[in-house]
Length: 367
Image (cartoon, rainbow, N blue to C red; front, top):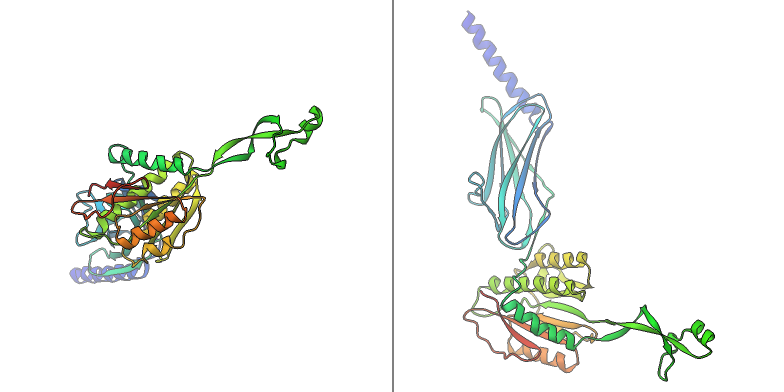
């Protein structure tokens, strides 16, 4: 008789815990996944932070979470290797507690990364029944292109490009930077006459303004395919060069803009950014470069070149692709007196069909 009672009580407890877990397992249960930073550069090490919270009086001895590992993020810990592209975690958590884990990874490639396909499963005490649900997350990691080291080929490239920038620099007087007063000379604009000083001295006097550099650079990335090289290798190095040049010239307080015939990885729309000189503008350029997708079909760069007419800024083309049509369009642009410069990133086994000149330089990309 006592054994029957004990058995009945055991069965009742099992039924009660099954009922409790079935009704309450989702209540007060929260699982979040976040990157330890919102942006990084290629090669940086970060963490994927998992936070599990149980805000109820029911313990959860078995909590299993799995998610799709973001591509090109290399997880380095012994317990965080992605198997078949899936990251998994097993937790045991008591009531009214929270636990957190960090999974280290290295950003192997620039791009925009999100966590997808997150599922969480919970078992009851005896592991006889499982309950699961899919979670949606709002997180995003921007991985910017690596900034190339400032030596060797990069230093030589700076010298060639700097000389072209200086040659095409437009010097204008800055009406907001007052330098002094002098006597009026024939040919001086009337807008510079200082009437108060003229009245005191009883002769015409004009203001002197300091000259400023009105040079602006548009970095133009050509995503047209090039021969005898995996599509991404040469273009990825060209993207890194864009980021390096943007940092260099904005550091020199020269206005830099960005344009490309590639598409945005998020919505497939064209990417273009006007000229700016601030650190915030440099961040925007890095963000544009991180979002460049090489998977969309892009229009030929010649269509973009044929539309250029602005003679007040310099267009710096970065293009491993240099077929006859592209080079002809580039020459016609120079004939229209538009300031231009072409950088051709070269790579092994590349067929080079262009010679260096005052406005064209070859750069060994190292790939």
